[in-house]
Image (cartoon, rainbow, N blue to C red; front, top):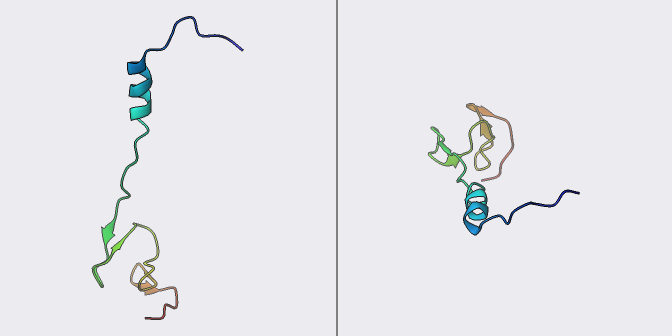
Length: 59
């Protein structure tokens, strides 16, 4: 395996690692009850997806 010809600076390493930061997931407001849900996912609180009941959820 090849060896690096020069030492990589601390700044260069930190810039690379800074690009791997975590992002908050995008959430959409459910029009039925106002809860926050990930887009294109079933609402776990109500069991609905695109205004249709797809899961039986006990309230």
